[in-house]
Image (tube, rainbow, N blue to C red):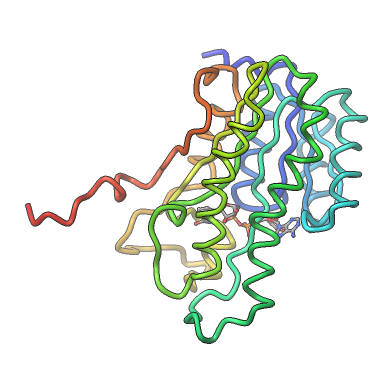
Length: 251
Ligand SMILES: NC(=O)c1ccc[n+]([C@@H]2O[C@H](COP(=O)([O-])OP(=O)(O)OC[C@H]3O[C@@H](n4cnc5c(N)ncnc54)[C@H](O)[C@@H]3O)[C@@H](O)[C@H]2O)c1
């Protein structure tokens, strides 16, 4: 299937690791050029070297509005356009702490990176995206946008906010084919999930729950970036092996 990404330029935040890195590789494999944005300079430079002339890396923290705007503009200048934005930069925050133990600073940091970071990325990409024939934004939300596990209050709150940010942006930007969607995966095998769940180099073994790969998520993201999903807008693509669909009815 031709996904129509051969002349596209896509910005990926959080591109230096995990899901963002898989998205960057998958987008380049489909012919897109990619602007990689991350605060991890060494890993971002390494990925840009691996991807070659189809990629440029610009170091920026997504909570630093000036640095992020300059990074977005640098990608637009390098490749002459921006057609899509994929917001993967995120943190899990104080994993395992109950609400009464969480500092307001930690709560605010999770919201700042996961929610404000996505807002700022879209805010500064919009004027470039408006020149595209098929502008698309994909936010990395989570199954935590819908359901919650204990010990993850700030993260759950941030992912719920990203779901509604997706809908709000899709309505706010709904003109000339502009689309905003999000992907909501359950556990993905990335450094973030491994650190939170204490998974070492031995891997997941029989974890007792399904685990997907960053490449699984990247395929969903590439589809939502692509004009192949042209009628899909304001949508949350839940990739959770069907957990959300299960009723508590004992049958
Ligand atoms: N791993 C999972 O199980 C899972 C499940 C659902 C959703 N997600 C979401 O997917 C996204 C990617 O997560 P991942 O698992 O690949 O994590 P990861 O830790 O492997 O990668 C996150 C990347 O974001 C970057 N980053 C973090 N804060 C940043 C900041 N302030 N500015 C710029 N870059 C920053 C990091 O440097 C890193 O490269 C996150 O939004 C996460 O919440 C992950």
